Image 1 (cartoon, helix red, strand yellow):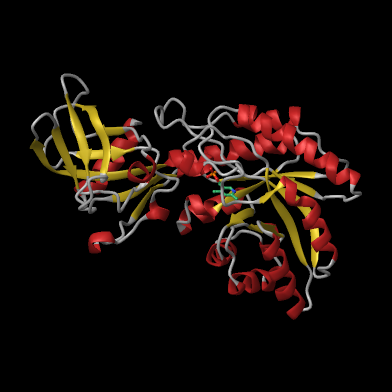
Image 2 (tube, rainbow, N blue to C red):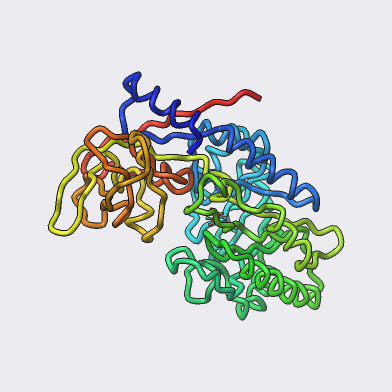
Length: 391
Ligand SMILES: *Cc1c(COP(=O)(O)O)cnc(C)c1O
């Protein structure tokens, strides 16, 4: 971690900031956003920010200045996006279970597009739009059958997943669409999973999209846009030396392999890749306990502040920023205070000798951290702090 960041955090705690708290480096967020707009801009691609990764108001207000488009998966996310500066006409609304109320709200806001995930959903959106005398723009979320080779809980592009419409259902979908006058199909949507660090699955996705486009061509259906979703991963092992994913390579891959039709626009929905690395969960050691074989460092943060390790065995780099050096340490099981055995941030984590009161930084927590906070054990929701930057 940068020494300026370490001093800033120590100063906050000296000034009685209570741990745990979510800490965000806005400078890295800005750099990341600039890299995205620069690299996506080369090809005229449009990036929507996936609010579900982090919906902290201050973070959202920063992002909406660079990326006016948002990807939402609930009515409240649509509302929050508009409130924090995203452009309603650039909001896409996905999700397998949109309720009637959520659909009505999104129709009232005239959002860009509903990404539809089932035949029945098409019928319901048509019905709700008809009641308002509106036409809803829709994209079909197609399940491309591409394996993202990521954790099975965050793989979404396979037939066995609950997401999307299967390719073999498409003829039936087109038949149904003909009988739904309040829907206008404007695009196709795909999202194959999350935390994808090897670009190969995205290449497979491009090839699949090309095939599917040929089929739509044969049906004489023109689509204004293709949306390839998000899923670009980050390097949880190297939050400093690899603070940003290789956006240049990512967007270039789509330019190289995805064949767009004339006047067709390519859209993306990135979440994690934008916000993961700018967030750090800051906690303090409450107790150090010697077990039979292991030493436990018991933190004041737990799965209530960061559930990813408990939910999908995910790795986060853990640092003791109070200890003078990294040398001559021990292996610690770094655990939280919650009454669940899965409340563990890391097993056999090498740390310098660690004592009560030491400040522990859990890195790369900007995505799927604060948004998944819970009050289990009647804990309080941890606050957030920001490290500003000069422009
Ligand atoms: C979760 C999600 C995203 C964002 O995924 P990341 O891995 O955070 O980039 C994009 N689109 C859809 C439909 C999603 O469900």
